[in-house]
Image (cartoon, rainbow over all chains, first blue to last red; front, side, top):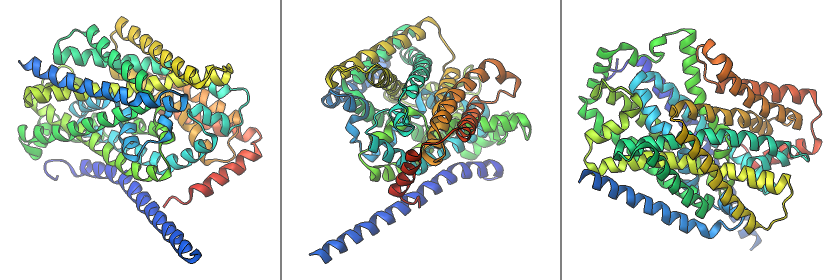
Length: 50
Length: 492
């Protein structure tokens, strides 16, 4: 029991929020990383071209 | 005095909607502008607008009512919806956007027709029949909610409430097209989120704090704090929990939500939008369920659990906020009705009139016809809502699953399984829809009231995969799917 709510109810709530949120955060960070590395590569190519 | 304050808030909100309608009208002159806002929407608009469209009045009246009636058993809805929204943005949105940009598609049947090289327009005709039948039921249910909301907040009478709700939606939808729909949905989504965050924050202290509410709920009925509710660990409990989770499946492939991905400016908007969409749906659902639970302690003898939100807003807040809450309920209704009307209009004008019947009318004329069709579909919904006062959420959940079971299995197979064939996709679409309807009419009450979305999805997937394995896939389409995968890149 935590703050009057049973632990299994807390667990269900945490899983309900955590699963989707973790999936989205991993995706968001992964794509951001991908985007910035391709931007860096683009800048390097431009500098080499110049 | 109280009534005047509420009316002033309402009029202010309606004027903003009318302004958005006029503002959007500049881009509604051709079909691409009218149905997908020229494919130029930013991340924050598609995120809030897809959630506001997906949730409807069911979120504010139905889910708060579930929190009131069944307590933490409603957490299963949160699990399904958060997972559904996150999966849609992570897995579905980018390949779907890539495909639809390649095809210059502006409707989901446009996509399916091009993806499966359907020269006979079977997808367009089947989609139009399914979308029109479900949209009528869905719109009528939302207009019923509008009638009830106006009547309970302002005492206008049910019929007047239905008329007012429809007149406003029809105005900004026909004048402003999808751009007005998406931006007004954004505003409506923000209002809904604000309401559902504030409501429990005010209600819990009023009901004795978080621990106090939980103890009061246990004293009222210990089942309110059990994840499996009154059923316990049983087949009926599992069927009930699975049914709640399945509500979220629809986010993966319902056309009124996929349209948002099509209308995004580019792939980067989808990456950013997904983050906002998931945070938004968490706020929506957690706020609604907890508000209902606190409401159970504050108003234990309420006859209709779905009236807990109006009851709490009238009792816990000053008149200005009661007006805001009326606006929020209307926002939830309108944000769904406008998208459904646009969807049904696109099915008639783009898929049947222009592509199947081969109309040679120019874009401006087709856009005008689209606006006329929007009005006609709204009028049919009005007649249904006026002639028969229905149970709102029974029809919402039925129509929600009818559309989702027809489209989601097929869309998912088309995006991720290269072996999917045209015949398999048609079988999956028709089978998923028919199973949903038959389940409700013939079987549901004999199988623990299992929500129709589950057998509808099962039949849709089984038929799509089974028939695809028995037929020959198109080699060009298979190569194209690999190319789309490469273009989209890795997930993480």
